[in-house]
Length: 139
Ligand code: ATP
Ligand code: MG
Image 1: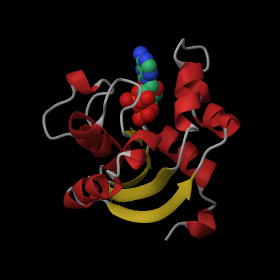
Image 2 (image 1 turned 120 degrees about the horizontal axis):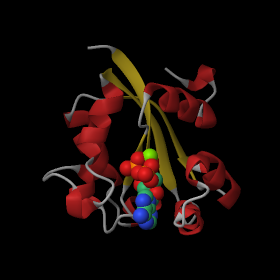
Image 3 (image 1 turned 60 degrees about the horizontal axis):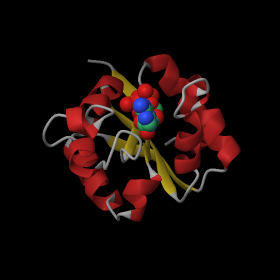
């Protein structure tokens, strides 16, 4: 299995509910290594830039409002097969469909306020890591 890097965001809902520590505990238990971290409060514009692939979707305005509504913790995670594995540990976008013990099953309150983001493919991961971290900040 290749060693990969992926981008995750502990979203404002999980931050507000004080589940940051719980989520990091799950990530570390699943052998992800944190190689960069930043606490951010995204502007609306930054949230729109990050999720631009969804700009035509009906939920884009509320998604970007939510993502800019409070602090969020952005991290780069490293590990074997990290991109696909993070998506498994996160669970389905809609927590009602997420597998038991996944982060979204445990901490998401709905399809939009779903606690965590994870890159969905190698190209997306590279692009999203570059959106938040200059190369020099990656350990
Ligand atoms: P993420 O990209 O945040 O990891 P994802 O890849 O599981 O989530 P996407 O389809 O990329 O899901 O959607 C991005 C985000 O937009 C979701 O995580 C969620 O916060 C929000 N979202 C997705 N679908 C809906 C929807 N039908 N209604 C409201 N919000 C949605
Ligand atoms: Mg996505």
